[in-house]
Image (tube, rainbow, N blue to C red; front, top):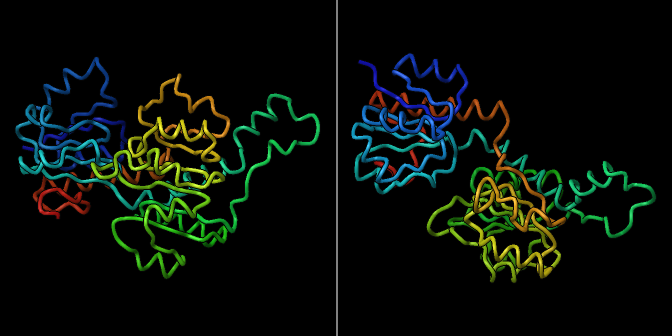
Length: 325
């Protein structure tokens, strides 16, 4: 009998057919209220889960007594209770690396758009306000030859540093759990404390995963440390930032602007003050959202899953999962 797999996110048929070679697939294109009772019913016999965003916690796991592996089709895994999964001897995987360049393109594009006020000026032209020479109040700031501070020099952070160093002659500062000798040698990046990075950077780019240690990492004190001329970019998770502190810092002109791909609440509430600020550029959490990259992520998730149900070691075990320190 084939292992039973629940896929709870829209997937390319190529991915589903790959899984079907080994498993019986129960497919939910989206987990909305109409199908959720069926999903819970199917959990009783499921050997594996594939998707992203679903809160896999004690309550859900109590409904899935046969579960062997949970596979995220994302690099982030803050939706998974790793401690609870480990207690139950359930493997957890994600899909790192395949999205690094795509996310780096998005985040560096967000940085450029914020610095040069591109969305605002796009509307300026489309609203027929471009009648005479632009005024100085519409000017942006240079990106080239400035200092970029990257908080979280993982795969995406490294790809951002590459673009900044070789494309824009930027000085790179970085902060994280450990030093990265390759980035220091290749991009002339300098490791420093968070405080020093915030004080010296013209652009602060937050790229850390969401963990208990990084939740609320950027708060009132951190924004006060930044230059008044600095721009903050968040490409990590919304909850790594105290959003109220960010709003207050922007209102008080403690920082120049912000570019955000993530928010504390997603989709973002229509009455969120960030949406009415001209010096804030907002994206709908689209860092990895190209057709090519999403297909690669889904296929990697599928390969993790198939390896797991076969009793093999998946290629992308999450740190903190079974057998991974």
